[in-house]
Amino acid sequence: MTLKSTSSETTSAGSKAHTPANIDALRTVGVVGAGQMGGGIAQVLAQSGVNVVLSDVNPEGLKKALLTMDRSLGKLFEKGKLSEHPPAVLGRVKTTTSLSDLAGCDLVIEAVNESEELKTRIFKELDAVLPPHALLASNTSSLPITRLASTTKRADKFIGMHFMNPVPIMELVEIIRGHSTSDETYELTRSLAEKMGKKTVCSQDFPGFIVNRILMPMINEAFYTLMEGIASPADIDAGMKLGTNQPMGPLTLADFIGLDTCLAIMKVLHEGLGDSKYRPCPLLRKYVEAGHLGRKTGRGVYAY
Image (tube, rainbow, N blue to C red; front, top):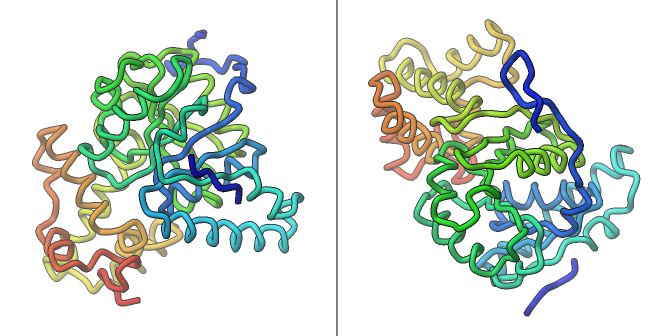
């Protein structure tokens, strides 16, 4: 081991009423994937007093995640938004390159790339090493929770926990119940999100869930608007910002999210719902094929 320190009542709206959950049962939480999302999730967990085991196959990725957390916590402390000293928070985060080191976790949140094959492989391995009581959660932004859960022997303890980017700043966690997700699993997950200072919404397991079912077709339509020469990228973004009071335009947002991620979600919507209105824009495909994925590659719709 190479660990390093560093319910049930229904409301009129049809959602489950909040019932108390034994949040103390989640003493240690694992996070798989040390990228922007995984690192952010690990940071907010540690800020809320939870012990975290952050796993990634790339040691350099783990080092980068810790450095990013340290900078983020330092800024929060300077602004008075964090009362605890950053080193104390980071002391609750351990890192590892082996999934077997997550064997002592009570919950593991997967936050790797939006690849069903990769996620499935990880969940099968986690299912084999985790204790029977442990929960599994996926940070997927669009893939079916029920299908991911079916690759494990604990479908009742499997749930979607979709964080928004950047995790330390965005308030929302979208919770997705699979076909077999138990009420206890849902309540524990919701209570953990609230302990992390987040607000939650609950979605049933349909392609895109709530947020991306609405957001991604808007982004896709912005690419059609650009492809058809209706307006320039700057005017499309300015029109949506000023006309609908959005904090950033859809093309700027797409660059921030990653055009490859946007395309992957549109493919899930198109294939899962079978409606031509979800067909990914050819221009979006072209950007991805060219390797212009947005901010993370220095070039997308805009140059960075």
